[in-house]
Amino acid sequence: MKKKLTARTVNALKPTGERFRVWDTEIIGFHVRVSPLGKRTYAISYRHKGLAKEFTLGTHGAVTADQARDLAKSYVGLIAKGEDIQAVKKTSKAKADMERFQTLGAFITEKYAPWVEREMRSAPEPLRTLNRDFGHLHTRRLSEITPWVVESWINQASKKGLMPSTINRRVGILKSVLSKAALWGCIEQSPLKGMKRLRIDKMGRVRFLSNYEDKRLRGALEDREKEERLKRDRYNEWLLTRHKEPIPALDGQFVDHLRPLVLLALNTGMRRGEIFNLRWADVHLKGKQLTVRGEQAKSGNTRYLPLNNEAFATLVAWRNQTTGDGLVFPSPTTGERLIHIKRSWAGLLKRAQIHDFRFHDLRHTFASRLVMAGVDLNTVRELLGHSSIDMTLRYAHLAPEHKADAVAKLNS
Image (cartoon, rainbow, N blue to C red; front, side, top):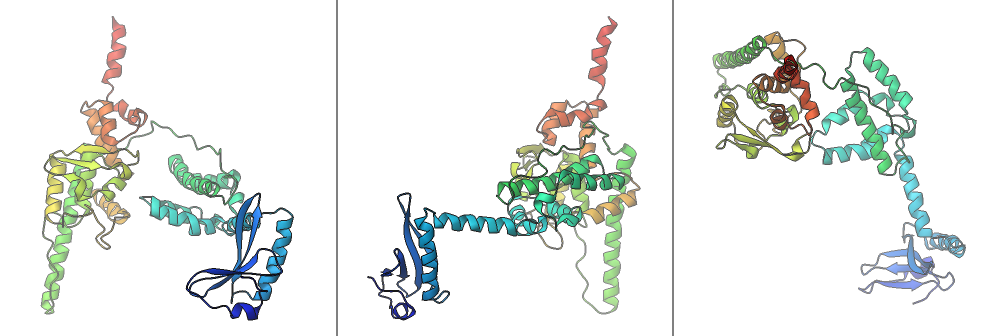
């Protein structure tokens, strides 16, 4: 069907129950598509390098017939010059997208944060770092975040006492953002590409609990639980004197997740994130073993950890007072995955009078005790989930016998 496409002729088109087209009598390729429901869309058909293509100009109502005719005339001129107007539109859209996400803050909000929340287990951690440490860069264009800018932040962070390993970890998050921006076409190349990490002592200092500190930590855990039970009892007494319904008593061996969580870390060497992600489906009490799944492990490899007597008894007691479903240590407020235990952990260390000790050092304590008990380094590596022996070698000095034996051979 052919007609000169004007407001009058287009308005007069009625749906037939099937899709059809009406071609303009003057402009080659210009036409209107009419859907079975009556929606009318202006478009232009053309050929580029032998391929038939169609370019949408707009829907009737959003654009008028006269506006669509003017657009069609301008595009016919471009087609006559050999241009692919569909490709030009895609290029223009890509450029507009690139311009839209040119600042660090816009890129994080619109693209990076949704990807992190969907793909990464520890989503809040990198986003928190980007806001806390690099919030002052959010208004900068991605291409302006150069090594010099980051070096300025590194100098300030070093003056504040941040360890080189911590600085490397936080800068690594920023570098990953810019790498994603380059991969997704928002910038041509990451301005931090090739920027080197700070040198760190890989062997480093290994902080682990002394026997005396271990006793103090366990004592602090028990004292904390006694106090929590006393608080609950006193509060209930207060409620009863006012003829109010008391809250449930703290039944079970533990008052909350802190003590079983710490005891499990001490006896398995699991990372904090691995414990937070642990589900009852991966705890096999019958076989005295638990599974750290690859998708939850830093190395990406699944490993199986045997449970010693204390770890086993802890999990049995904890399961008896919980649902035994889902996460082993869910957040007591949301029921979802724990984000952190900073407040309770800091309070515990203060109560135990233990200084300069991180939760991760429970993992060092586990590994150090194994090595000092004569367990070979490769077995320690497997239990810790290290992908190579290099990380495990930091504990080698705790078992110097093999070096002493080697040197003793010179005596003869």
